[in-house]
Image (cartoon, rainbow, N blue to C red; front, side, top):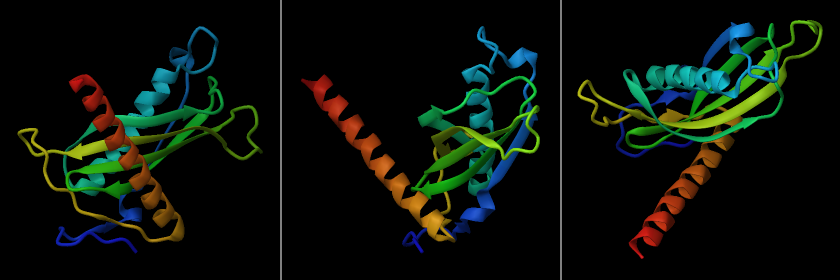
Length: 171
């Protein structure tokens, strides 16, 4: 399993797992009669924030939403579950993976439908808002290891994109 040298004692991936659930109502809909993407984005940010705070043992703030993919519409009456876990940790930052599924109110016998996935980066902060070290995440399963490795790929892409934009702006 992946370990960070000379870092505070880590926590297993399962420690950070959080699920939030809610029934979508008429106040959540867009002009098309389905749940507004912004409602789901806030839900994703809320569950990711809970996972980040649990893992870091304190305040953690959203630094970026790396990716969010909406794969199926959510409807009024659907019971929606957002599942989050810490996939990767750096010195002060964490990648949180989120899967959102919906139980269709009119199809109770069917399995939940995956409606969205997202990857967010959170930074652990102290009371003054300055970044503070975060304990390492310790993958427990082959799936956790896969998520950790893929998170490292996404991080490398974020850093490369930032460097390329900075170089372009510098002329």
